[in-house]
Image (cartoon, rainbow, N blue to C red; front, side, top):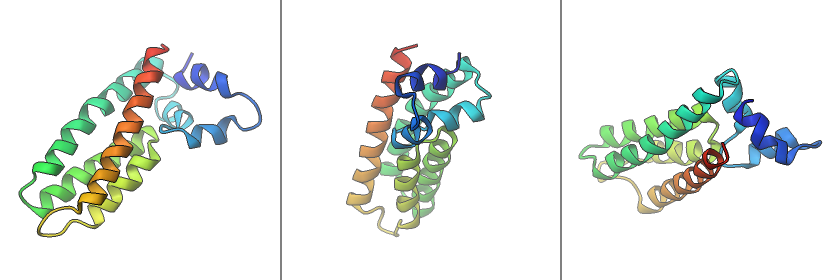
Length: 129
């Protein structure tokens, strides 16, 4: 059974798909992209948790605007891949608003919070498997 099948079973009803969009990770999107392969879903989610921290650190420590944009772009792409739409949006705002002197603290904080919320959600999903 795919993650989406197990996790969305709690939310079954007329709004199951809409409910998946309101969570930090769109499990329906994830299942489509992994063709329902549960092991692959688990692996992709675990990779996101690990890599999101790595790229946030790179974003904070980047010496150039180009490096900041590259780190934000990577987070955005990874987030879109798993259906973490709020993270993707926050990363896109960071990517679009990098200046020579770095990233605005408020935008970086919003991205960090979004990643934290998403990673906590992922950990809860993984603990139910």
